[in-house]
Amino acid sequence: MIETESDEILRDAHTQDVALLVVGDPFGATTHTDILLRARALGIPTRVVHNASIMNAVGACGLQLYNFGQTVSLVFFTDTWQPDSFYDRVRENADLGMHTLILLDIKVKEQSEENLIRCFFSLSVLLDGHLCME
Image (cartoon, rainbow, N blue to C red; front, side, top):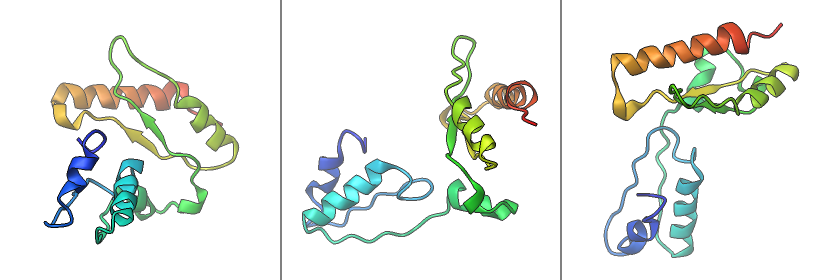
């Protein structure tokens, strides 16, 4: 909805309170930033309440954010679709001596034991065979 109906979201914001609640950091997606900038350009008062996200929680595991390279997404593998486009970014980060935050697609809207096992299997294959780097 946000990508296709952002004008609708802002339409009545001059006369009524409008809130946009997102999972994670409100500026983690360019669409959210775009809506904020357009609201300000229209003279609509804005307020941002920052939320926790994996991007700012990663420091809790003891790794320094300064040592992270590009973040990549690993999509949910299926029997017919197992893209490896993330690999080049991970390799570049490793070559630079940097950590890589890999965001896993875990099919939140389609939770099941089968999907969790498949996600775990995909990550295991990734770590055991494809990406173990010396």
